[in-house]
Length: 114
Image 1 (cartoon, rainbow, N blue to C red):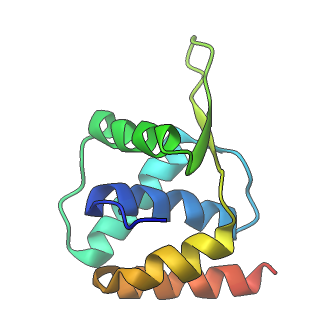
Image 2 (cartoon, rainbow, N blue to C red; image 1 turned 90 degrees about the vertical axis):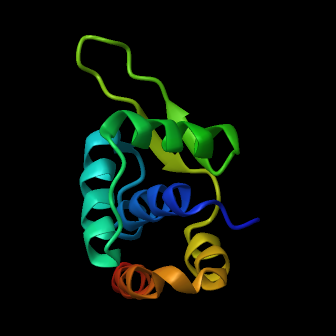
Image 3 (cartoon, rainbow, N blue to C red; image 1 turned 120 degrees about the vertical axis):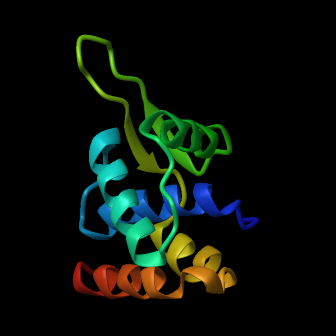
């Protein structure tokens, strides 16, 4: 798995955070909320909600996330990891030293729920 650009990586890390807590299918809003928290920790200006959803869709197109389409009337898209969570935390995030603090939080979270 190649290291994605920074904003895509943060989107992936946000979805992974939820998976590491034992959630399997996560709606867009909770992922975006976690993304904003991670951007704050890393001192990065977050994308707008719309641009963030584009990053999630990019990850889905890359077969890293699986997307279940919301069916309108306020129903959100839901995302699942299409790759093993350990692969994301140990392999992909290990290659990107920029997000070390957030990566450590993910590793700790994953260890709690195994």
